[in-house]
Length: 224
Ligand code: PMT
Image (cartoon, rainbow, N blue to C red; front, side, top):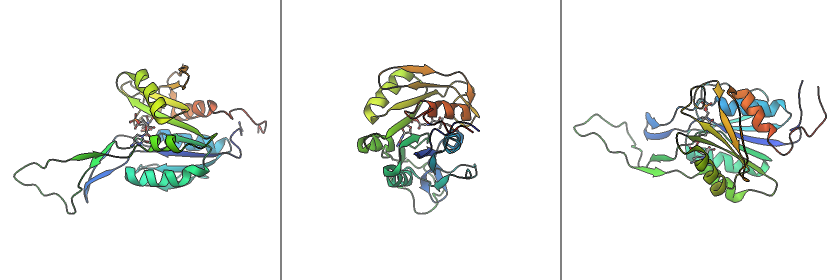
């Protein structure tokens, strides 16, 4: 049993890393396992929401009762997210999207040669910023920030620049926080400067704490 406070709401979640190809067999990526985003999708489902999950390549199976779309690159994630966004009451961006991609991925496998190749990188589109620009009235936009320094300052800048309603700050240098592990240590930061630091807890508990911060939390009485 539990709260069904997201009944009638559509929640769009992103999870996992993206892969940016260097050649047909190699890519640039990061350590995101998808656990944080999948925990959010499952928690929102259990609270009665219709859940759309756009995920980069991860080893996790599709959560039952969640509509999953698997993508690979930041460009593909952008396309999928913008396609679903108009239906979403809440968008939660737990994915670790690549900020840069190789400018000219090689058509054939790069061969070992005399000179080491030099890879030119170009920025990807900031999906969250794009969502902030298009945000519909009443739509709630939640970002994450994975920082290693100047945490609060960076979080506050991201809230402003990306037009967010909430940012989930994880100090990825702390043990038991951030990438790959089953737990996280986060601070919720709001546009008015308020912040709430949560103790170390499982990613599922962090997910529920994030959903508790939504405007509809605790709204219905359909307890089971
Ligand atoms: O997947 P796990 O192993 O469980 O790890 C969880 C996590 C550490 C990946 C997660 O908790 C987390 O912090 N996700 C965001 C990681 C990240 O990319 O942070 P950032 O500070 O670089 O980006 C800030 C925000 O902008 C994020 O919401 C990100 O989704 C978004 N972004 C970034 C770049 C880009 N091109 N488009 C974006 O939308």
